[in-house]
Length: 288
Length: 267
Image (tube, rainbow over all chains, first blue to last red; front, side, top):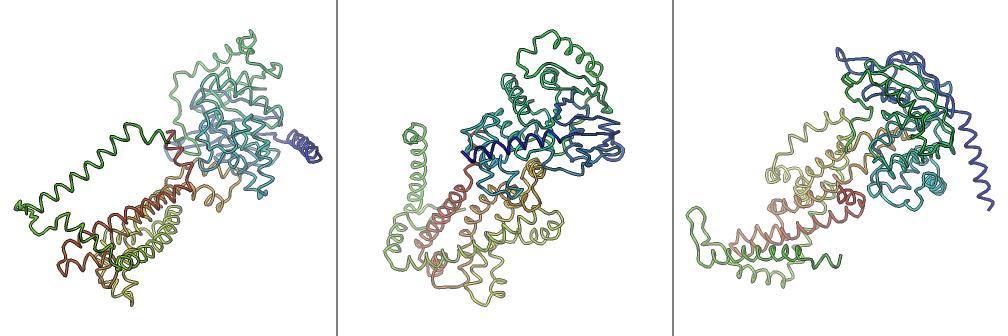
């Protein structure tokens, strides 16, 4: 009994901590990719300010540099010019404070679900008992209790992404960076995952930067949509989305939703004929 | 599992295996009892299956079998153990560091194609005890498959997993122990299983050096004293034990890699 009340109070503190952190300031950011003559600005003169706890979707056609922007936030790409700061600190490299989730999971195939989730704590030197307990909490948060001792390959695509999210959140990141995390899932599962993500976000309150080329997804999830255009990658518009929360799946049929969707389609359309950039991920090509 | 054992496809498979082996023995029997001479190859001096079986029974009943096997097993395992430690350590280092690869790999690449038998004179010169030189030959036989499979395993580790471990807070050492080592483990196990096979493969070569006991020595000595059926008994023993211990290594390794088999089953 005593233990659970202790747990609860530490949970609350965790939520407060995160409420106070996770503000992002991007100023005149340019990221150059490629070498020599083939070098180009994948991200050009991007300035963006994100409030702590905000859910921002970056929307754009494939190859518009939105993944590069996320790679910069993660610390995998160094800015050519400009700066990225999280809570006032300049981003210098990858850090557990900025958790990454990709379209294809990067779970360790040799670790069971529980050990995958607990990995971040193990790296921090947390003892086995505590990290197991907290990994269980995290799995409960993403609705995967009962799957602790499975291997990743024994899970469906949606479950694998939930484990991935739990593994990132156990580090209590200031920011969760998501690069089309539901892009490889079927439509049904994607919708369920979006609802789950909103529920998880409501409870942990971390800042989320979510990359997608799916307008419906961006409109459904975001507090604010940042629309990017390709070649060079620039921000063309910022759209505040004030649909009431919690949001339900039937939101997508409402007239306001359709109206915003039409607006986004118009913003994205002029670039339809532009050849997209080659996909350059800091982690190399996905193996699937 | 139980129903699997009796399914028709398996019965057909096992019947085919047994029939094929029986046909080989039958052909052997026919060729040797008729003293077939095909010009290019002749079976006039080749012992018959019956002679071989007789020699095998004699060997199994004699107290020498244990000594022969004991001596050979000890040599192979000593050589294999040395090759496993050296091969895996070198392979991990070479696979992980480009700089060390360019320093360490060229001399190994030069040594690799040299067959074990060519090492015999040098082995005799380098090691004062003939026991050590025999162990060295089996070591050479096992080393390269272990080394190359380990390098291959390390280089095959998914770079995305390394990057993801780093962003979850893993340092250099943790990346090595938590990502590179388990990721390379299937390759290492394959290398060890092949290395165990090649160590036995080199046994006759090793035991040509000298000795009184050893299944390879038994085979070679039978040739010099013209006990032809015994040659084949020795060959079959080496083949069977080599295959058996290779399978044993693979099975033991697989106990540590349950995830790997799940992955292969589902993909």
